[in-house]
Each structure stands twice: as structure tokens, then as C-alpha cells.
Length: 312
DNA sequence: CTCGATCCCTGGACGC
DNA sequence: TGCGTCCAGGGATCGA
Image (cartoon, rainbow, N blue to C red):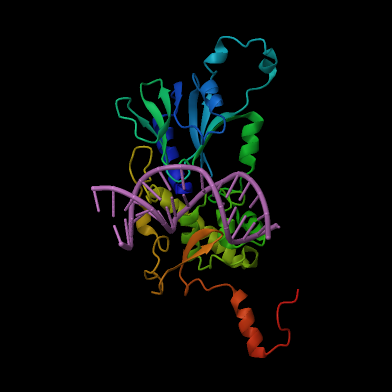
């Protein structure tokens, strides 16, 4: 559920509370959501969290300093000394139910706290994730770059041309494209539905068939919605809270998400929910008319054209 | 290339 | 009160 605005909210909180702190120890409990658990235990102790950034739905804890262990031995691998220092980061994806926040050590561990980073100011940065749909990975240099390159444009920064090009590059439905992190990074189910409603576009429409004006409306509305949601510190569905444990407020502004059967705020029609691209999609059947696909048969019967069934 | 199906996982909602 | 069942959802993966 944490999408771009929620992740941005958490990132801002962490940037102001744990940036600059050094990690002393790493304690892992369940670790099946971590790419390489041993790498965390090996590389993180002794490192400083230089800054915290958002990348799509990922959080990047940029690391500085030297790992505690390599300060002792391993000097024989001297070839690395000539290589310029490469970027290193702890990548964190919150999945559906992930939380990353600083705690005082006397606060009891909750049932699903799987990772604890002991910090140099006496606090603990704890990762909690009931469903473990999240992901955590220590990545450096080329591996980090390669990981980040997989993702598409940031929806807050993408230009008109780039956005149009990306949407038109495939024959997928617009909902699928908005959710595809290699097209745009950071949009999830809530904000995809909200943006499509605002732009009056049916989620099952083929992206490549959207008119340039529709695409530009969609890009602008998506951006506005995301920015507004960031202002309100995200949507608190399930149990999203920011790094300080405070819920967001944007869920009060949802126009379609979670409003199945209720009246459209624009026209009063009942909001519908269908499955598109395997995800539940909320939309107004009146404001967001279905794509033309259905009208083909209607046209055929009307004009009584001979071509009976589909011939490719 | 794009799709649906399936899996991961647990808590919450719901029915009885 | 306590079951069982279904569902949510981001993302990886596989087969159609």
C-alpha cells in the first residue's frame, strides 16, 4: 500500500531523524525478504546513514564510511584501493505492510519486527513487516546502478514528451501501464485509480490509443494528486504511519478508491470496481466511459455487415 | 508482447 | 468465542 506519497513521507521523516547516524549492529530475525542477509550483517555495522532518499517506492539509505569489519583485516585485497569509491545503499521496499522507524530500545519489539539496526545515539532503527511483501537489499556500485536502471521515470518529474512516449510504447491498458514500475516508478493502485478518475479515463483503455490531450491531462492530474497526497503525508489504508508513527490524511480525499457502490462526486453515478491487470480498479462508469471495444459488435449488427466472426 | 494465473504472507472482515 | 473462508495487494515468474 505504501506508494510514492507514503514512501516520500517516511523518507522525509527518516531523513530528519536518522540521517547522519551510524549503524553499530544489525540484528536479523526473519530474513526471507532480504536479498542477501549476510551482506547486511557484513557491510552495515560501522557505516553512516549519509542521507535517505526515495526512488519510486523504494527508500535508499545512502551509506558512507568504512564497514567495521574490513577496518581490521583483508588489507591484501589492495586492488580496491585504487578504485574510486562507489555509491552504496541499503534499499528498502515497504511492500504492503512495511514500517521503518526509529525506536528507543526500551520500547518492546512487536511481533513482526524482523530487522533492528542499533544506532550510535542509543536508538534503534526497526523494520517491521507483517506480510513480508517488502524487500531489503544492500547494494553497491554497478549492482546498485543496475538495480535502479530497471525502473521508469519519476511521475513527479516526467516531461510531457517522455510520459507520452512511455505510455504509447506498448499496447497495454492504461491501468497496467501506470502500475508498471518500469514505465513509471512509484505509482500504485490507489493513485492510479485516483488519477484516472480525475482525467476521466477508463482504466481498461489501451494506453497507446489515448489522445495527446488525454495523456497530458493524465500526467498533470497524476502529478497534482501525488503532490497533494505528499502534503497530507499519504493515505492511511491498512495501517500506514510515517516514521514518527503518525497516519496520513489523504485517504479522506479519495474520489474512487475504496468507494465501490458510492456516488461519484462529479456525476452521482455509482462507482464500480472491476479487475484490470489483475488489480481491483475503481472508476465511475459515467465519467470514465468504457473503451470502444464493446461497440464493435454493436456496430456490426447495426450495419449488418457480412463478416460473421473474427477473421484475422 | 501482453495477458491471466499463481505464489508469497498475514490480518481483518465476514458468516455461521 | 471461535472457527473457517475469502480477500487485499506489489512484484516475480510462468505458461498461454
